[in-house]
Image (cartoon, rainbow, N blue to C red; front, side, top):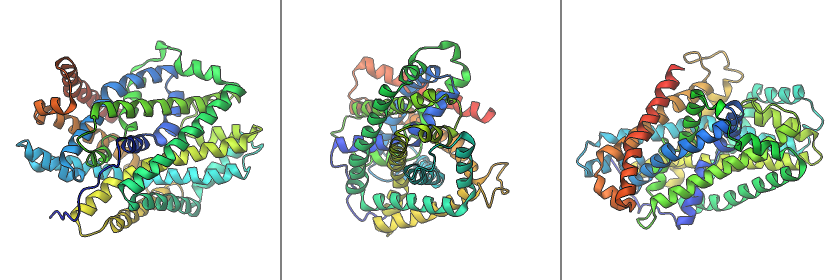
Length: 450
């Protein structure tokens, strides 16, 4: 039984909402995953495919989730159920909101572990631990961290506590207020790092690597990788944008705001490439070194640079800021649900949700050491959580959301709400009804077969 204890929160301004939405989108996916995927998937070929996919898939699904959230003005489960009922459809559409909340809940459990790695590396780089170390020594440092259950638990706990504190404070003072501080700082650190690279070499090679078209490397695998990343980088399919949309007022133009968020998210991802690849190239490192690009390859470079301690510390602060702005958004849908559907106030809902997520995160980090022999269908707990969410929950939730908006809701009211002329409305219909759903289905099936 729903318990409505208070008026639903609202963002204090469109600007604050944009920063919070960008903060959710700009996370480890942009600063950690995007660069190494570029390195593994053909450089500029991946960038071209990514830009194409984010426009045709990410953008419409983002708008759809905000639209549903603003219509419902409640947690994702009630929002989908209530909007469906108002359209004369079954309230069982609330399942879409439930899978979104579950996806974000599970993702945060292992996302917080990686956020803890970044926090740990701030202290390591700042103390000069990597100065003069070779690749074997840096790799050994990373492996030693993973092997220590105590170290991982401490940093996972600190990161989760920071996340809970921000969410517990509230939507405007906590999430929005943090975004207004951290997002400009994130942009400043990126600007400093890119500026350093312009002066100190490797920048031209990085620009060519990222932006010189090389269609010979544009394979089906690269397209699928780009489509999957474009889908996940905007925090869609996790209940986040539905929850964020529920705090939106009617005065906000969804299309213009989504365009701003997509552009800023993409610019930051590309800037991260310009912050990382010049350092990689100027030190003769491999851009295709995969997930270890950030935690193994870059510390080697920082350890051999004159200003490496300062630049490295700034970089891992950047990683941490990006991780926190995303982690608060991952926690928010669960907290919103508990706050609305139980007698808990916001702080208590945050403590309960965070504690359960923290415990699941401890289980995930133990898969690197004490529980390394325990597997679920051949995967450790950490990898199992990653695959469950990325291969199943997120694509299916995003697919269901865009189908609901494109096929189940009254299209005339959507056209009015989006303020589209007839020509643009026809384009929206093609993308929302066919292009985006088909693309997600293709990625989903191909990933399962891979």
